[in-house]
Image 1 (cartoon, helix red, strand yellow):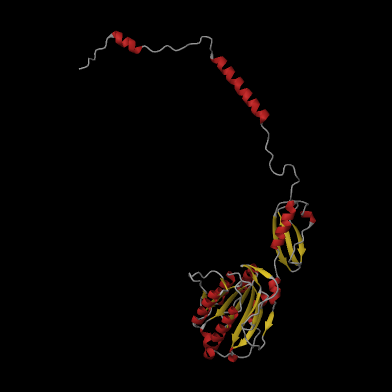
Image 2 (image 1 turned 90 degrees about the vertical axis):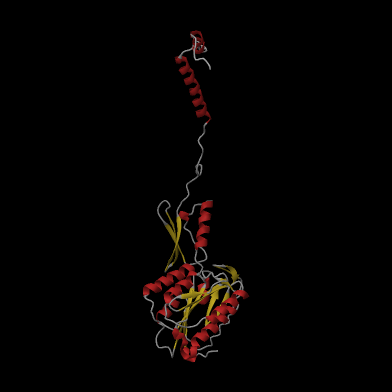
Length: 349
């Protein structure tokens, strides 16, 4: 067993520690003085070498900054540059192809050129509305739906570039690159041995056949609720290119559609406009339930946002007695054409 006895001599050796070096000439006051001198020279060196970083335009003349806003008025198109010094500025321009910018808000600089280019891009394009025109067609001409390939050049439609095409549906012609067909399939379409439904389906197929592969289309049948044409994967919230495969699928969809149920116009029209087409063909055999002014205004605003022309066709039995009511108003509000068709003169296939 290890002994626990510790002699005084051994304890004395264990308690001894190494001596610390002592500089009798060193003092705390001198240490503080040297530290202050070093920091002073470091601070002075930083101040001499430091230069402020130039930001912004570096002394160039300030340019007006604001938001370019376009308004349509009875006197033409107004362009506002809001938020700039001196308040908003504006200019009227009846020509939709270019925007005239006042010199007071357009200094000679690259920023001004960029703003002018922006306003030019924002200028509305009314060419397709002028192509279809506004009016009423109550003639007794045939209902041939076969359209004609249109006009010169290319049209950069909302869904890509393509040939601008003219196609007719139930005797009404529309021009554009994208088309939506909204058709009533309520039970009243079964009158006269289902002639209205049969003729509408035949004319719809002919109209789609007339479209080129660059064109796009969508079909919405409705009674109490709208039913759009779906893609192969079941997607229904998009347009379809008028290629042979899509045309074949569309014809199958048309043939399978039957007429039954009641009528709800508004939801079907809103769905049709949600696709943003150049032209929307709307066919119904019932003016009930009537759309009120607020609902028509809502449809007009939606059509204006998507630059859509709405053509309307009213199917009724017997000669026309009224002026078309809200169905005609909807066409006129969107620069479209209204047509009345006597279903008693229609012959099914």
